Length: 122
Image 1: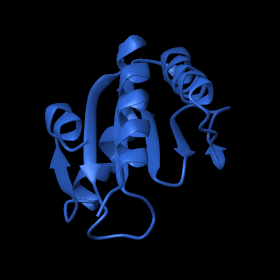
Image 2: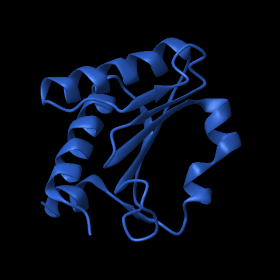
Image 3: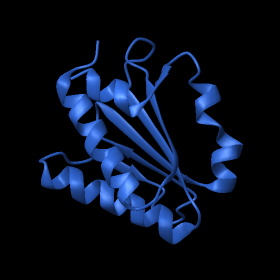
Image 4: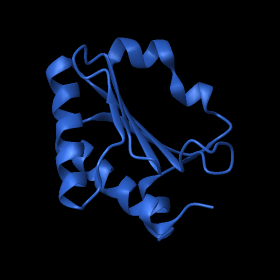
């Protein structure tokens, strides 16, 4: 079962991604199928600069709320950047790598949810 903290972090991260026009944001509740995290947030960017801008904004917005990533991987190449916040894991891809890795398919045992459902789950 997910906790309120994870939901709050996820909503802040989604806001930050939307601020930078991230493409096709997916929210996958993996709390019932994995101990890795409660939520995967997956989004795309049109190019390296946008992918990095999305990640920078997520880090800034969550940081202001007192949340700091355990780890960030892939920032320099920016074809797939992963941010691990413990309860949530943020993935931002360029278009080509998002299609190639297709995390939504790999994590299909998780439950895809919409923002409204996440907000209502508070």
